[in-house]
Image (cartoon, one colour):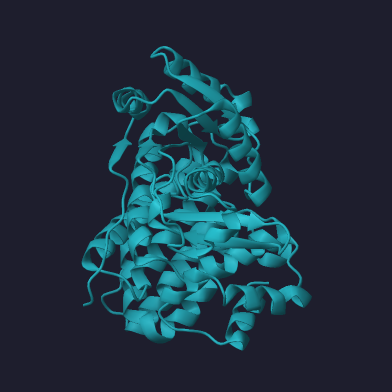
Length: 383
C-alpha cells in the first residue's frame, strides 16, 4: 500500500450542545469579527441570529451574509468576499449544509490567496491556508463542514467546479443534532443519501485505506439503521444524532479516499440543471455501482452485509446485486424520485454531461475507469 495522508479539522465538536462548546473554542482563539455565511431560510428561522447573539455575549462582532444559493456560485463567493473585506472580518463562520460551507470555503480561500475562485479548480491549487473557518453544520449529509472538498458552480460554463484542497479544511467543525431537528423530510432524505454515497464511493475507491474503510463501514451501518427514522420521525433526537455521526464518519472516509463517478456525474447534473446534489447522488448511486461491480463485487457484497442483508450464501456478484437492491429500496422508502427524467434531465444533454464528468477530479479514484460511451450508458440507465 502506498503512503497516504489523512485530513481532518484540528477540532471537531459533536453531539447535543456542541454549538455552545464551539463558541467557547472561538472565544479562546481570540477572533474579533466573523462573517457568518448562510442562506435566507436559516436567517428567517432565527438560527443565524442566535449564533450572532452568542458571539456578541463574548464581544465578538458578526456580519451575516445570507446570499448563498442551493448550488453556490462564483457570484455568491464574490459577493461574500466583498462583504468580508468591507466589514474587516478576521474569520469566517459557515452555518448550514453543504452550500454555505462550500461558499464559505471559497470566500476564505480567495481572501487569503487572492485571484478568483476559478483559479483553484482541481487539486491543491492554492499556496496559503484560507482565512480561519468555523463550520457549523445543520444537515446530516454533505460533511463539507470537515472536508477539503469545495464545490462551486461556474455560471459561465454551467459546471460545478471540484476544488479539492487541503487549505479549505475548516479549523473547527460543529455537528449539533439539535440544529437538525427542524429539517424537512425531503432535505433529510437527500442529505442522508449524500452521506451514504460518500461512504460507498470511499469504500470502493482505489485510494481506500484501513482507516477510511473503518469509517465507511460504520457510516453505512448507521445510515441503514437510522435514515428512515430520521426522515419519517424528524424530531427523534437519537436518530438525528446517529445520522450526524454517520455523515461525519462518511466525510472522514471520502475526505481521504476521495470519491468516484457518482459525484463526478452528479456535479454535472447540479451545474447544468441546478438540481439538488443529494438527490442526484441517490439516483446515480445504484447505476454506478452496477458498473463498478465488474471489479469491486466483493466490496459491494460487504456493503450489502452492512445494510443488513444476509450474504453468507451469496457469491460476490450476487452480493453486489443485493447491495444495489438495498440502496434502491432505501431510496424508495424515504421518497427519493425514481429516475432522472422526473428531475427534467434530457437525453440530448447526455453527451455534454458525460464529457464534463470525465474531467471531474472525483472520478480519478473510481475503481474502474470508464470510457465516454460507458458514462453515457450510465446516465441513460438512470433516466
